[in-house]
Each structure stands twice: as C-alpha cells, then as structure tokens.
Image 1 (cartoon, rainbow, N blue to C red):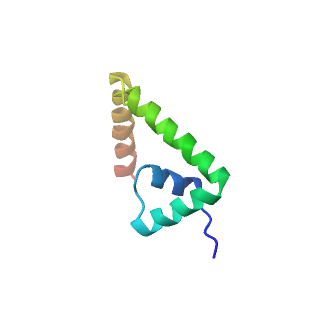
Image 2: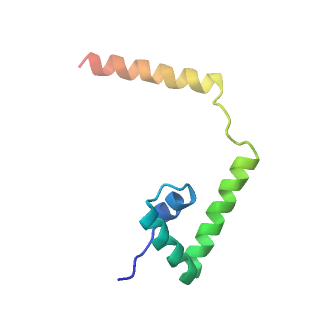
Image 3: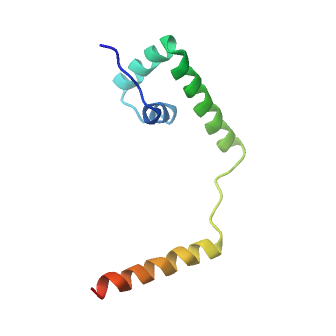
Length: 81
C-alpha cells in the first residue's frame, strides 16, 4: 500500500515529532517522491533560517496588553451570561 504524506506530516518529520515507524516510512517516501522531497527541503531550509536569524521574538508590551484586555472583556461577558 502506498502511503501519502501531507504538509502536516512533513512538518512533523522536520521537527522530529513522528514515531520511528512513521519516520522510516517518510524517509522511504522522500527517496521516491521528488515533490515530497522538494517540500521537505523547503521546510527544512525555512526552519534553519528561523533558527539562525533569531526570529524568536517576544511580543511587544502593547500586544500583551491587548491580549490581556481582550481576555478580561471575554471573561466578563461569559460570567454575566
């Protein structure tokens, strides 16, 4: 039976979130499916760029304030019902 892999599966593979059995099947599929291999290489490249460029930024204080304010308003709406 031929296994088809989705974008989500490739992301899981790139981030090592697959079982060893799934990963083995993915490795085999990558050998024979050029489109899947292209997608894998693009995602791996994007992951490396993110990690190398320190894009892991913290949200601004105004963003945090907006989220907290929304949360307070939502809680008031829920409790008043």
